[in-house]
Amino acid sequence: MSSTATTTYRNLIGGKWVDAQSGGTFTSSSPANHDEVIGEFPASGPADVDAAVAAAKAAFPAWSLMPAPKRGEILFRIGRLLAEHKEELATLMTREMGKVLTEARGDVQEAIDVAYYMAGEGRRMFGMTVPSEMPDKFAMAIRRPIGVVGLITPWNFPVAIPGWKLFPALICGNTVVMKPASDTPACVVRFAELLMEGGLPDGVLNVVTGSGTDVGHAIVEHPDVKVISFTGHTETGIDISTRAAKTLKRVSLELGGKNPIVVWEDADLPLALDSVVWSAYGTSGQRCTAASRLIVHRRIHDEFVEMLRKRVAALVLGDGLDPKTDVGPVINERAVERIAGYMEIGRAEADLVLGGNPARDGTLANGSFFEPTIFTEVKPDARIAQEEIFGPVTSIIPVESWEETVEIVNSVKYGLSTSLFTRDVNLAFRSIRDFDSGLGYVNHGTIGAEAHLPFGGTKATGNGHREVGQTALDFFSEWKSVYIDYSGKLQRAQIDMTFADQE
Ligand code: NAP
Image 1 (cartoon, helix red, strand yellow):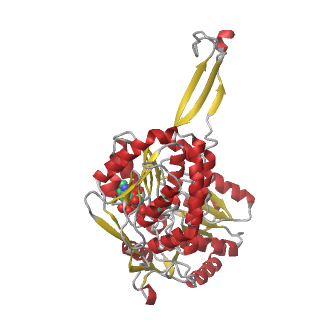
Image 2 (spheres, rainbow, N blue to C red):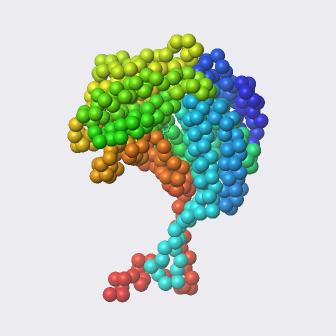
Image 3 (cartoon, rainbow, N blue to C red):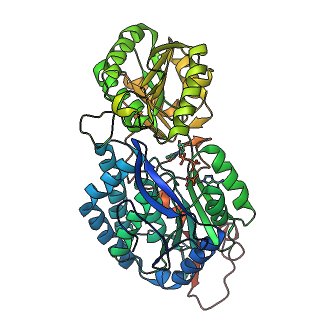
């Protein structure tokens, strides 16, 4: 077992909790208070990855042969256990990465939802049966497990995203080696402990902590890892994809976003306001689906900007465990510096309405906080309108025509989530058709995806795969087409008994 609270945690390899072979460690600390150490973790390397992959490979035959409904029963038990430990996991998450407790509970709930959903898939795991073109011949396609899967996860949804990847991978009969982000290893190690307690056989899940270069590269390049599922920055995704190509791995990439909310002139403004505040400043703007662009009709621009300024100015910054806090810290000091760098760029490109500085006063002094920030009169091609800042910052772009709006929505390199506030049903449907994104919302902010529909984006947000929902099964299983001829004679497809022959 890993030890508790702020002491030493270990890797999970073959059902045992072990140190890094090098003996090296690193610490994780709270972004709300840098003096609060969450724990010490193995600084692992390729040798630890080799051991984890070997354990996953050894566990694969028995796990892949276990009937999928039985695997589903284990996932169901795990879902129940996660629900029982929801508060504990959420509190750990808030301490380790800063999001406010209500949101941390939602993060754990996403993993619970996917556990239950995928448990049910164990009794479906639908294949296909089709009529054969020949008489007395049966034709079907079945799903098969692939093998050892490598999962590399980010810090911003430290339980939900591991759950999104892990549960479909497991229900399909694969075994797993997972590397958590180095900013949130405690969340993932504790999550893994609960999964083992829920009844996962030894070796089916292995967790190796350590850096992207030491552990991430080793997983991506390992010849016995057949599949990689990664969520993180677009640049990291490109690096992973390039390395994985050498061993012909299947790779799913969930990457960055620059998501717009369009507030049209006929919008319900109070509703749009609530949704913008939730989408732009929730998780301190560090969601892949964060609304970092607001495209606002010129006729209501001044009124809406003033409503937003007032509301955002009243948001309380602080420790996410404090119920009075609306916005927690950003993940670390590097993030504060990156966001501050964008403030200089933004001041030169646009009008600063609110915020724009690191927040260091009083109780915030020992954490990584940034003032919720609004820019307006932002040009669509400005850097703050094009690049993922990943902080509590939104850029308002005024517009006058629908054609211009569609062009601006689609002008960024990403395509994750888009949203439109309007009462015009025609525009609502046009937005769904014309906004280039994997998720589309009407009269709802850019966040709020559910476990049973595909999740992912277009363009530089990914490489075409979708997480969760049924589509996740397509990524984590191999199709095998099967033909059973019970005619007792040679029947040649495309040659004997074709329609043309009968003419
Ligand atoms: P990141 O820096 O790319 O890191 C993600 C994970 O990859 C971490 O575990 C990291 O390890 C590891 N890693 C880093 N470099 C690597 C390499 N060269 N090879 C293999 N692994 C490597 O991203 P992040 O800062 O954690 O997450 C924020 C990004 O994720 C944002 O761009 C956000 O939009 C995106 N995101 C996308 C989605 C989506 O579904 N589209 C969802 C959530 C987040 P270390 O922590 O040890 O560096």
